Length: 68
Image (cartoon, rainbow, N blue to C red):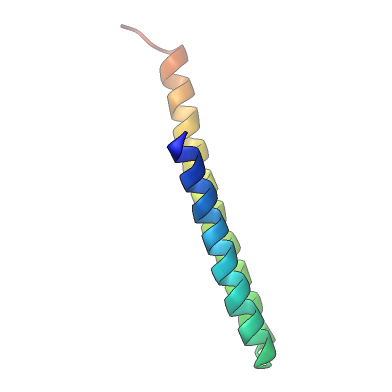
C-alpha cells in the first residue's frame, strides 16, 4: 500500500513543479519554453507510469507462470 501512495506523490510532485515553472515562464513571455517544460513533465510522468506497469505485468506473469 505504501508503494501506491509513493507513485501518486511522485506524479503529483512532478505536476506541481511543472505547473509552477510553466506559469513563471508564461508570465515572462517565454511560452515556447513553457510548452517544452510541460511536454518534458508529461514524458517524465509517462515513464514513471510505464515503469510501474512493466513491474505489474512482471508480477502477474510470475504469478501465472509459477513453475515451482
